Length: 442
Image 1 (cartoon, rainbow, N blue to C red):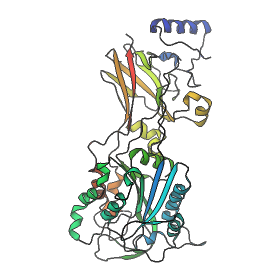
Image 2 (cartoon, rainbow, N blue to C red; image 1 turned 120 degrees about the horizontal axis):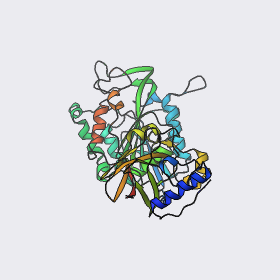
Image 3 (tube, one colour; image 1 turned 180 degrees about the vertical axis):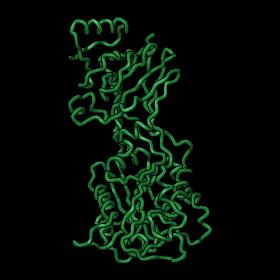
Image 4 (tube, helix red, strand yellow; image 1 turned 30 degrees about the vertical axis):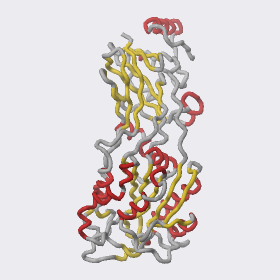
Protein backbone atom coordinates (compact mmCIF):
# COMPACT_ATOMS: atom_id res chain seq x y z
CA UNK A 1 0.00 0.00 0.00
CA UNK A 2 1.43 3.37 -1.02
CA UNK A 3 0.79 6.22 1.37
CA UNK A 4 1.30 9.68 -0.11
CA UNK A 5 1.85 12.38 2.48
CA UNK A 6 2.51 16.02 1.66
CA UNK A 7 5.73 17.34 3.08
CA UNK A 8 5.64 19.89 5.83
CA UNK A 9 3.32 19.03 8.73
CA UNK A 10 4.87 18.87 12.18
CA UNK A 11 6.58 15.57 12.88
CA UNK A 12 4.45 14.77 15.93
CA UNK A 13 1.21 15.17 13.97
CA UNK A 14 2.54 13.25 10.98
CA UNK A 15 3.67 10.23 12.96
CA UNK A 16 0.56 10.26 15.11
CA UNK A 17 -1.40 9.78 11.88
CA UNK A 18 0.89 6.97 10.73
CA UNK A 19 0.64 5.15 14.05
CA UNK A 20 -3.12 5.51 13.94
CA UNK A 21 -3.21 4.07 10.43
CA UNK A 22 -1.13 1.16 11.66
CA UNK A 23 -3.56 0.50 14.48
CA UNK A 24 -6.58 0.64 12.19
CA UNK A 25 -5.10 -1.51 9.43
CA UNK A 26 -3.26 -3.95 11.68
CA UNK A 27 -0.22 -4.43 9.47
CA UNK A 28 0.82 -1.78 7.01
CA UNK A 29 3.64 -1.68 4.48
CA UNK A 30 4.99 1.83 3.98
CA UNK A 31 6.42 2.28 0.49
CA UNK A 32 8.46 5.13 -0.81
CA UNK A 33 7.57 6.43 -4.25
CA UNK A 34 11.15 5.61 -5.23
CA UNK A 35 11.20 1.92 -4.39
CA UNK A 36 9.03 -1.14 -4.12
CA UNK A 37 10.53 -2.53 -0.93
CA UNK A 38 8.81 -1.86 2.40
CA UNK A 39 10.05 1.00 4.51
CA UNK A 40 11.20 0.17 8.00
CA UNK A 41 8.13 1.06 10.07
CA UNK A 42 10.06 0.68 13.30
CA UNK A 43 12.45 3.39 12.27
CA UNK A 44 9.59 5.73 11.51
CA UNK A 45 10.39 6.13 7.80
CA UNK A 46 7.42 8.04 6.44
CA UNK A 47 7.23 7.01 2.82
CA UNK A 48 7.03 10.65 1.70
CA UNK A 49 8.61 11.55 -1.59
CA UNK A 50 12.31 12.30 -1.27
CA UNK A 51 13.88 15.44 -2.73
CA UNK A 52 14.49 15.03 -6.49
CA UNK A 53 18.05 14.27 -7.49
CA UNK A 54 19.88 16.93 -9.42
CA UNK A 55 20.24 16.10 -13.09
CA UNK A 56 23.67 14.69 -13.87
CA UNK A 57 25.76 16.94 -16.11
CA UNK A 58 26.10 15.78 -19.70
CA UNK A 59 29.29 13.75 -20.09
CA UNK A 60 32.01 15.23 -22.24
CA UNK A 61 32.94 13.19 -25.31
CA UNK A 62 35.89 10.85 -24.92
CA UNK A 63 38.83 11.49 -27.21
CA UNK A 64 41.46 8.79 -26.84
CA UNK A 65 45.05 8.31 -28.03
CA UNK A 66 46.55 4.82 -27.65
CA UNK A 67 50.35 4.50 -27.50
CA UNK A 68 52.11 1.13 -27.79
CA UNK A 69 55.81 0.94 -27.06
CA UNK A 70 57.30 -0.62 -30.19
CA UNK A 71 60.68 -1.93 -29.11
CA UNK A 72 62.76 -5.07 -29.03
CA UNK A 73 62.01 -5.39 -25.33
CA UNK A 74 58.28 -5.60 -26.05
CA UNK A 75 58.46 -7.97 -29.01
CA UNK A 76 58.40 -11.08 -26.83
CA UNK A 77 54.84 -10.27 -25.69
CA UNK A 78 53.54 -10.52 -29.28
CA UNK A 79 54.84 -13.74 -30.88
CA UNK A 80 53.44 -14.56 -34.29
CA UNK A 81 50.68 -17.05 -33.51
CA UNK A 82 48.71 -19.71 -35.31
CA UNK A 83 46.09 -22.36 -34.79
CA UNK A 84 48.51 -24.38 -32.65
CA UNK A 85 49.95 -21.39 -30.76
CA UNK A 86 47.64 -19.76 -28.19
CA UNK A 87 47.81 -16.01 -27.82
CA UNK A 88 49.75 -14.61 -24.88
CA UNK A 89 47.95 -12.84 -22.06
CA UNK A 90 49.25 -9.55 -23.51
CA UNK A 91 47.76 -10.30 -26.91
CA UNK A 92 44.44 -11.30 -25.39
CA UNK A 93 44.02 -8.35 -23.04
CA UNK A 94 45.55 -5.61 -25.20
CA UNK A 95 43.80 -6.97 -28.27
CA UNK A 96 40.49 -6.67 -26.42
CA UNK A 97 41.35 -3.19 -25.11
CA UNK A 98 42.24 -1.66 -28.46
CA UNK A 99 39.23 -3.34 -30.11
CA UNK A 100 36.88 -1.91 -27.47
CA UNK A 101 38.53 1.48 -27.95
CA UNK A 102 37.94 1.22 -31.69
CA UNK A 103 34.27 0.19 -31.54
CA UNK A 104 32.98 1.80 -28.33
CA UNK A 105 30.20 4.29 -28.85
CA UNK A 106 31.30 6.38 -25.84
CA UNK A 107 34.47 7.42 -27.68
CA UNK A 108 34.05 10.33 -30.09
CA UNK A 109 37.53 10.17 -31.59
CA UNK A 110 40.47 7.75 -31.33
CA UNK A 111 44.01 7.69 -32.70
CA UNK A 112 46.79 5.11 -32.46
CA UNK A 113 50.55 5.53 -32.16
CA UNK A 114 53.70 3.44 -31.98
CA UNK A 115 56.34 4.76 -29.56
CA UNK A 116 59.72 4.20 -31.18
CA UNK A 117 63.07 5.79 -30.51
CA UNK A 118 61.72 9.10 -31.78
CA UNK A 119 58.42 10.93 -31.34
CA UNK A 120 55.26 8.79 -31.30
CA UNK A 121 54.29 7.75 -34.85
CA UNK A 122 50.62 7.74 -35.87
CA UNK A 123 49.42 4.47 -37.42
CA UNK A 124 46.04 3.11 -38.54
CA UNK A 125 44.15 0.85 -36.15
CA UNK A 126 44.77 -2.13 -38.43
CA UNK A 127 48.53 -1.66 -38.20
CA UNK A 128 48.46 -1.44 -34.41
CA UNK A 129 46.33 -4.58 -34.28
CA UNK A 130 48.80 -6.34 -36.58
CA UNK A 131 51.62 -5.51 -34.16
CA UNK A 132 49.64 -6.92 -31.22
CA UNK A 133 48.90 -10.06 -33.25
CA UNK A 134 52.62 -10.56 -33.84
CA UNK A 135 53.11 -9.12 -37.29
CA UNK A 136 56.33 -7.41 -36.22
CA UNK A 137 59.23 -7.33 -38.61
CA UNK A 138 61.78 -5.00 -37.09
CA UNK A 139 61.11 -3.43 -33.72
CA UNK A 140 62.80 -0.20 -32.73
CA UNK A 141 65.46 0.15 -30.05
CA UNK A 142 62.94 1.87 -27.81
CA UNK A 143 62.85 5.16 -25.96
CA UNK A 144 63.88 5.68 -22.36
CA UNK A 145 60.86 5.79 -20.09
CA UNK A 146 60.93 9.47 -19.02
CA UNK A 147 61.43 10.65 -22.60
CA UNK A 148 58.58 8.43 -23.81
CA UNK A 149 56.16 9.85 -21.24
CA UNK A 150 57.31 13.41 -21.91
CA UNK A 151 56.82 12.97 -25.66
CA UNK A 152 53.30 11.63 -25.16
CA UNK A 153 52.19 14.41 -22.81
CA UNK A 154 53.71 17.12 -25.01
CA UNK A 155 51.55 16.15 -27.98
CA UNK A 156 48.87 18.68 -29.05
CA UNK A 157 45.71 18.49 -26.93
CA UNK A 158 47.23 15.78 -24.73
CA UNK A 159 45.98 17.42 -21.55
CA UNK A 160 42.38 17.56 -22.84
CA UNK A 161 42.26 13.93 -23.99
CA UNK A 162 42.85 10.43 -22.65
CA UNK A 163 46.29 8.92 -23.33
CA UNK A 164 46.56 5.14 -23.01
CA UNK A 165 50.19 4.03 -22.72
CA UNK A 166 51.11 0.32 -23.10
CA UNK A 167 54.66 -0.67 -22.14
CA UNK A 168 56.74 -2.93 -19.92
CA UNK A 169 57.99 0.28 -18.22
CA UNK A 170 61.49 -1.14 -17.80
CA UNK A 171 63.85 1.77 -17.20
CA UNK A 172 67.38 1.13 -18.40
CA UNK A 173 69.04 4.53 -18.89
CA UNK A 174 72.24 4.94 -20.85
CA UNK A 175 73.64 7.03 -17.98
CA UNK A 176 73.76 4.82 -14.90
CA UNK A 177 73.68 7.83 -12.58
CA UNK A 178 70.08 8.43 -13.69
CA UNK A 179 68.94 5.42 -11.66
CA UNK A 180 69.29 7.43 -8.44
CA UNK A 181 66.96 10.13 -9.76
CA UNK A 182 64.16 7.88 -11.01
CA UNK A 183 61.25 9.47 -9.05
CA UNK A 184 62.43 12.97 -10.00
CA UNK A 185 62.85 12.04 -13.66
CA UNK A 186 59.34 10.61 -13.79
CA UNK A 187 57.88 13.62 -12.03
CA UNK A 188 59.59 15.95 -14.50
CA UNK A 189 58.49 13.93 -17.51
CA UNK A 190 54.84 14.03 -16.45
CA UNK A 191 54.88 17.70 -15.41
CA UNK A 192 51.52 18.38 -17.15
CA UNK A 193 49.92 15.94 -14.67
CA UNK A 194 50.42 18.37 -11.79
CA UNK A 195 50.21 21.55 -13.88
CA UNK A 196 46.87 20.61 -15.43
CA UNK A 197 45.59 18.46 -12.54
CA UNK A 198 45.39 15.31 -14.66
CA UNK A 199 44.74 11.81 -13.35
CA UNK A 200 46.90 8.72 -13.84
CA UNK A 201 45.53 5.18 -13.67
CA UNK A 202 48.00 2.28 -13.67
CA UNK A 203 47.09 -1.33 -14.46
CA UNK A 204 49.59 -4.16 -14.00
CA UNK A 205 49.47 -7.59 -15.63
CA UNK A 206 51.83 -10.48 -16.37
CA UNK A 207 52.13 -12.31 -19.66
CA UNK A 208 54.07 -15.15 -21.18
CA UNK A 209 57.08 -13.85 -23.07
CA UNK A 210 58.90 -15.44 -26.01
CA UNK A 211 62.16 -13.96 -27.21
CA UNK A 212 64.83 -11.58 -25.97
CA UNK A 213 64.28 -10.11 -22.52
CA UNK A 214 66.20 -6.89 -21.75
CA UNK A 215 66.45 -6.28 -17.98
CA UNK A 216 67.31 -2.92 -16.44
CA UNK A 217 70.10 -4.53 -14.41
CA UNK A 218 72.62 -5.86 -16.95
CA UNK A 219 74.64 -8.17 -14.69
CA UNK A 220 75.37 -11.03 -14.80
CA UNK A 221 73.89 -11.01 -18.33
CA UNK A 222 72.73 -8.11 -20.48
CA UNK A 223 69.85 -10.04 -22.02
CA UNK A 224 68.16 -13.44 -21.88
CA UNK A 225 66.06 -15.58 -24.19
CA UNK A 226 62.73 -16.54 -22.62
CA UNK A 227 60.38 -19.29 -23.70
CA UNK A 228 57.07 -18.50 -22.06
CA UNK A 229 58.17 -17.23 -18.64
CA UNK A 230 55.82 -14.58 -17.28
CA UNK A 231 56.97 -10.98 -16.93
CA UNK A 232 54.97 -7.81 -16.22
CA UNK A 233 53.64 -5.12 -18.52
CA UNK A 234 51.48 -2.10 -17.71
CA UNK A 235 48.73 0.09 -19.09
CA UNK A 236 48.72 3.73 -17.99
CA UNK A 237 45.66 5.91 -18.60
CA UNK A 238 46.39 9.64 -18.31
CA UNK A 239 44.07 12.60 -18.77
CA UNK A 240 41.45 14.84 -17.16
CA UNK A 241 40.13 13.02 -14.07
CA UNK A 242 36.51 12.62 -15.18
CA UNK A 243 37.61 11.33 -18.60
CA UNK A 244 40.05 8.84 -17.10
CA UNK A 245 37.28 7.63 -14.80
CA UNK A 246 34.92 7.16 -17.75
CA UNK A 247 37.47 5.33 -19.88
CA UNK A 248 38.43 2.92 -17.11
CA UNK A 249 34.78 2.28 -16.22
CA UNK A 250 33.19 2.07 -19.67
CA UNK A 251 35.97 0.95 -22.03
CA UNK A 252 38.65 -0.95 -20.08
CA UNK A 253 36.13 -3.62 -19.15
CA UNK A 254 38.60 -6.49 -18.72
CA UNK A 255 41.05 -4.59 -16.53
CA UNK A 256 43.41 -6.68 -14.38
CA UNK A 257 43.15 -6.81 -10.60
CA UNK A 258 46.36 -4.78 -10.08
CA UNK A 259 45.20 -1.17 -10.23
CA UNK A 260 46.45 2.16 -8.89
CA UNK A 261 44.81 5.56 -9.33
CA UNK A 262 46.26 9.00 -8.72
CA UNK A 263 44.27 12.24 -8.86
CA UNK A 264 41.09 10.45 -9.94
CA UNK A 265 37.94 12.55 -9.46
CA UNK A 266 34.47 12.31 -10.91
CA UNK A 267 31.67 14.74 -11.52
CA UNK A 268 29.32 15.05 -8.55
CA UNK A 269 27.15 11.94 -8.85
CA UNK A 270 23.36 11.89 -8.65
CA UNK A 271 22.49 11.42 -4.97
CA UNK A 272 19.28 11.51 -2.90
CA UNK A 273 17.67 10.01 0.19
CA UNK A 274 15.17 7.30 -0.69
CA UNK A 275 13.43 6.89 2.67
CA UNK A 276 12.80 3.23 2.10
CA UNK A 277 14.78 0.26 3.31
CA UNK A 278 16.35 -1.03 0.12
CA UNK A 279 19.23 -2.68 1.93
CA UNK A 280 19.49 -6.01 3.72
CA UNK A 281 16.12 -6.68 5.42
CA UNK A 282 17.97 -8.45 8.25
CA UNK A 283 19.59 -5.19 9.38
CA UNK A 284 18.46 -4.14 12.81
CA UNK A 285 16.11 -1.16 12.63
CA UNK A 286 16.44 2.10 14.49
CA UNK A 287 13.62 3.75 16.37
CA UNK A 288 14.08 7.33 15.18
CA UNK A 289 11.88 9.30 12.80
CA UNK A 290 12.73 11.04 9.53
CA UNK A 291 10.86 12.83 6.76
CA UNK A 292 11.70 14.94 3.73
CA UNK A 293 11.34 18.71 3.84
CA UNK A 294 12.75 21.61 1.82
CA UNK A 295 15.17 19.53 -0.29
CA UNK A 296 16.63 17.92 2.81
CA UNK A 297 15.68 15.69 5.70
CA UNK A 298 14.14 16.55 9.03
CA UNK A 299 14.87 14.07 11.78
CA UNK A 300 15.09 13.65 15.55
CA UNK A 301 17.85 11.33 16.76
CA UNK A 302 17.73 12.51 20.39
CA UNK A 303 16.14 9.32 21.72
CA UNK A 304 16.93 6.75 19.03
CA UNK A 305 19.29 6.68 16.03
CA UNK A 306 17.67 7.51 12.68
CA UNK A 307 18.30 5.25 9.67
CA UNK A 308 17.52 6.03 6.05
CA UNK A 309 18.61 4.75 2.63
CA UNK A 310 20.33 6.87 -0.02
CA UNK A 311 20.84 6.27 -3.71
CA UNK A 312 24.00 7.32 -5.54
CA UNK A 313 25.15 6.93 -9.14
CA UNK A 314 28.69 5.54 -9.25
CA UNK A 315 28.77 4.32 -12.83
CA UNK A 316 31.76 6.51 -13.66
CA UNK A 317 33.97 4.88 -11.03
CA UNK A 318 36.43 2.19 -12.11
CA UNK A 319 34.80 -1.24 -11.95
CA UNK A 320 36.89 -2.29 -8.94
CA UNK A 321 35.69 0.79 -7.03
CA UNK A 322 32.05 0.03 -7.73
CA UNK A 323 32.17 -3.19 -5.73
CA UNK A 324 30.18 -2.95 -2.48
CA UNK A 325 33.08 -4.31 -0.40
CA UNK A 326 35.40 -1.54 -1.65
CA UNK A 327 32.80 1.17 -1.02
CA UNK A 328 31.94 -0.15 2.44
CA UNK A 329 35.64 -0.04 3.35
CA UNK A 330 36.43 3.41 1.96
CA UNK A 331 33.29 5.58 2.07
CA UNK A 332 33.32 8.20 4.81
CA UNK A 333 30.44 10.13 6.39
CA UNK A 334 30.99 13.50 8.03
CA UNK A 335 28.41 15.35 10.12
CA UNK A 336 29.61 18.46 12.02
CA UNK A 337 28.09 18.70 15.51
CA UNK A 338 26.77 15.20 15.12
CA UNK A 339 27.58 11.55 14.47
CA UNK A 340 26.70 9.53 11.37
CA UNK A 341 27.92 6.36 9.67
CA UNK A 342 27.28 3.88 6.87
CA UNK A 343 25.61 0.80 8.34
CA UNK A 344 27.66 -2.39 7.91
CA UNK A 345 26.49 -4.71 5.13
CA UNK A 346 24.16 -2.04 3.73
CA UNK A 347 26.03 -1.07 0.55
CA UNK A 348 24.83 -2.88 -2.55
CA UNK A 349 24.21 -2.51 -6.27
CA UNK A 350 20.67 -1.87 -7.42
CA UNK A 351 19.46 -4.58 -9.77
CA UNK A 352 18.40 -3.87 -13.33
CA UNK A 353 14.86 -4.87 -12.41
CA UNK A 354 14.78 -2.36 -9.56
CA UNK A 355 16.07 0.46 -11.74
CA UNK A 356 13.76 -0.28 -14.66
CA UNK A 357 10.73 -1.08 -12.50
CA UNK A 358 10.92 2.02 -10.32
CA UNK A 359 11.63 5.18 -12.36
CA UNK A 360 12.85 7.14 -9.34
CA UNK A 361 15.57 4.53 -8.82
CA UNK A 362 16.76 4.81 -12.44
CA UNK A 363 19.34 7.59 -11.75
CA UNK A 364 21.23 5.47 -9.21
CA UNK A 365 23.52 2.45 -9.38
CA UNK A 366 24.02 1.86 -5.64
CA UNK A 367 22.06 2.10 -2.42
CA UNK A 368 23.36 2.24 1.14
CA UNK A 369 21.87 2.80 4.59
CA UNK A 370 23.02 5.75 6.70
CA UNK A 371 22.56 6.15 10.44
CA UNK A 372 22.46 9.49 12.26
CA UNK A 373 22.95 8.82 15.96
CA UNK A 374 23.57 12.40 17.08
CA UNK A 375 22.62 15.83 15.78
CA UNK A 376 23.38 18.64 18.21
CA UNK A 377 22.83 21.67 15.99
CA UNK A 378 19.44 22.87 14.66
CA UNK A 379 20.71 22.38 11.10
CA UNK A 380 23.74 20.60 9.64
CA UNK A 381 25.13 19.31 6.36
CA UNK A 382 25.92 15.62 6.07
CA UNK A 383 28.76 14.82 3.63
CA UNK A 384 29.31 11.43 2.02
CA UNK A 385 32.84 11.24 0.59
CA UNK A 386 34.99 8.71 -1.23
CA UNK A 387 38.60 9.56 -0.27
CA UNK A 388 41.21 8.64 -2.85
CA UNK A 389 43.13 5.51 -1.81
CA UNK A 390 46.91 5.85 -1.57
CA UNK A 391 49.41 3.73 -3.55
CA UNK A 392 48.20 0.12 -3.15
CA UNK A 393 50.27 -2.67 -1.62
CA UNK A 394 50.68 -4.62 -4.86
CA UNK A 395 53.07 -1.95 -6.18
CA UNK A 396 55.73 -2.83 -3.59
CA UNK A 397 55.18 -6.54 -4.19
CA UNK A 398 55.72 -6.08 -7.93
CA UNK A 399 58.85 -3.96 -7.51
CA UNK A 400 62.46 -5.14 -7.42
CA UNK A 401 65.95 -3.67 -7.33
CA UNK A 402 67.33 -6.46 -9.53
CA UNK A 403 65.36 -7.71 -12.51
CA UNK A 404 68.20 -9.60 -14.17
CA UNK A 405 66.42 -12.88 -13.45
CA UNK A 406 62.95 -12.66 -15.03
CA UNK A 407 60.10 -12.65 -12.49
CA UNK A 408 56.68 -11.01 -12.10
CA UNK A 409 58.40 -7.87 -10.82
CA UNK A 410 59.61 -4.66 -12.48
CA UNK A 411 62.79 -2.78 -11.68
CA UNK A 412 62.05 0.33 -9.59
CA UNK A 413 58.28 0.18 -10.04
CA UNK A 414 57.80 1.67 -6.56
CA UNK A 415 60.17 4.51 -7.48
CA UNK A 416 58.41 5.12 -10.80
CA UNK A 417 55.04 5.41 -9.09
CA UNK A 418 56.58 7.46 -6.27
CA UNK A 419 57.34 10.05 -8.94
CA UNK A 420 53.68 9.90 -10.00
CA UNK A 421 52.44 10.17 -6.41
CA UNK A 422 54.69 13.16 -5.71
CA UNK A 423 52.94 15.03 -8.51
CA UNK A 424 49.85 15.35 -6.30
CA UNK A 425 49.15 16.99 -2.94
CA UNK A 426 48.93 15.00 0.26
CA UNK A 427 46.38 13.72 0.95
CA UNK A 428 45.07 13.01 -2.52
CA UNK A 429 41.90 14.97 -3.39
CA UNK A 430 38.66 13.12 -2.74
CA UNK A 431 37.14 11.21 -5.64
CA UNK A 432 33.75 12.82 -4.95
CA UNK A 433 31.67 14.38 -2.18
CA UNK A 434 27.88 14.61 -2.03
CA UNK A 435 25.94 16.52 0.61
CA UNK A 436 22.54 16.41 2.30
CA UNK A 437 20.92 19.12 4.44
CA UNK A 438 19.59 17.95 7.80
CA UNK A 439 17.25 19.69 10.22
CA UNK A 440 16.89 18.70 13.85
CA UNK A 441 13.21 18.23 14.73
CA UNK A 442 13.51 18.57 18.49
